Length: 88
Figure 1 (spheres, one colour):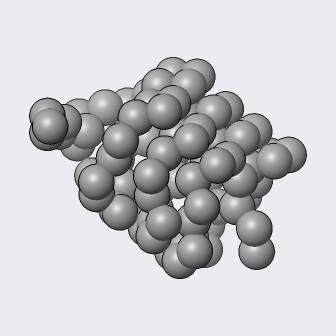
Figure 2: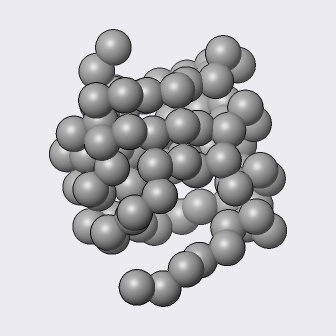
C-alpha cells in the first residue's frame, strides 16, 4: 500500500477518503486542516481514531460505517454534524 503524507494538506474535499483502506488509526498529521468534511472517511476500516487538536468541525457522515470503537476527540471540536458517524 501507499503512504500518504498529509502534513501539508490544508483542506479535505467531500468524500476524499471514502472506501479507502487506512491502516493508521491517527489523523494527527492533519495539522493544517480544521474541518473533516461530509463523508470524508466514510466506510473506512478504522476502529480506533485520534483526531488532532486543530479539528473544529466534523461533517455529515464523515466517519459513517467505520466501526470506530475508541475515539480521541479534541476538546475544541465545536460542531459534529448530523450522522457524523461518531456514537458517543
